[in-house]
Length: 478
Image (tube, rainbow, N blue to C red; front, side, top):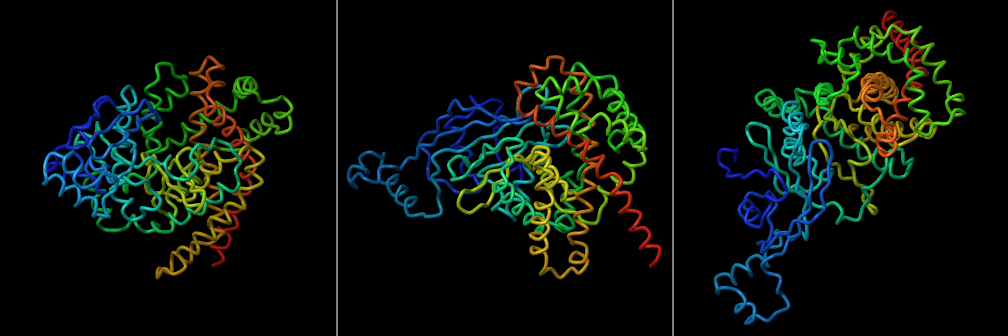
């Protein structure tokens, strides 16, 4: 059933959600509900940059099971309605959740971002195309539609707070047990879709409707470009970067200039960072300034990005990836250790190691990340290998090895640094009030994470270069 056959009223605010709306759209729900008597919109409103979420509580028409039959008939309008009640009571497939979550676009300057970058479209399509194939990983979605102009959407999904699981993990929480559960589930998901992006139906749909399959990691670039343009005050270097005609193609020479400019201005960034509870001792021990200065003299950033980021983007190991896989977007079941993942706006086809790197970058602080990341990579690798070991595609079995995955994981350092170094100018040039950051725990953890990425970049630089040289030598010998 396409949108032309559906009669959908899109919401612009939670006040638009009424019992009448719910009843009118209920026949289109993917999962059948028992007849609804009344819905109540609670005061809970939450969400991120692009979406507004709110909770609705549901009362059903036939909740008088303890009454005798005669009273039930009297309480209902007629016998026909009573018979309808009995029919639904006997229908075990019908559900009666006490409450649901509704998601609509966030009104304001970021609305155009969701529309122009196709992020609204992405999330709806993830629920329509990927969710049916891997429903265990997704919240149960009852209704998800987007209008033809891509400027409005609505999602009605289960309320994960009713499950026995934890969802309120913090950035840098250093929770090893929860991280292991997340990494295992992530590897299983990637294993299922290592070649799903080549499925003819999926690929044709992508070509016709600009679906997520032919977008890949380019969504990230578009996202940051449009996000920055929404600010009224921009650092001049950042303005130069996003104004480049080749911005969407990773303008390497310009990117290298930006990176060097940022490294040259480390004192300013360090002063900002120190104000945010970084101790001077910590900076001295990490030798951030010295390493940054040495790196800027040794590395031709344009050349390095070309060798590493393009290799990262075009690598043979490709799967459907989430692109924002982190604590805050997942719930872990306390009993089964299975996870539910939400916020699929950035999903695309890309290097699956990016999801792992991005997750670990935000799950652990500094030294804790160094302590656990190789162990986490081994868990991910073994789970992924187990997932595909029965595949008939020999090429997949051959390239999915721990050694190959480790190398790709290290290349993620360059992808991560490219993204994080694009954010540095925003932090330095836009935020003038440090208290604004101190009051935002997420922003604070992100900045600490970016500092660590510079150190990772330094430590892995020569290792990657040596690995590439060794691989080239082996190829020449062959």
